[in-house]
Length: 129
Image (cartoon, rainbow, N blue to C red):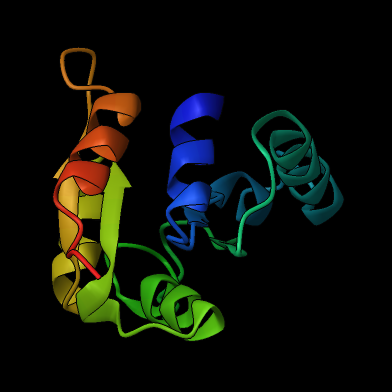
């Protein structure tokens, strides 16, 4: 994954992480623990242009929980791009739905089609400059 992300960065493609972290809202983890994990992920995989998460439990009707589009729209804004230019790589139906709700494209990953496969597809299909 490090190599695939390095190739995105080398191609000047901004990268964001957006995630639901309902464990915070459920009292299972703290915001500090989520932030510590995010820092460790960046240590292992390199810097991201935006890291956003929804801390609410699924029973809270917030605007940021996927499949609502707010996290993706906010990440696009933070990276200075239009959501329509974004590709959301996700492993849950709510990721795909959130992408559609934000006007972004999506790639669904699972054990057969991995995140590395998805990144390679993004690199193959990027517009030429």
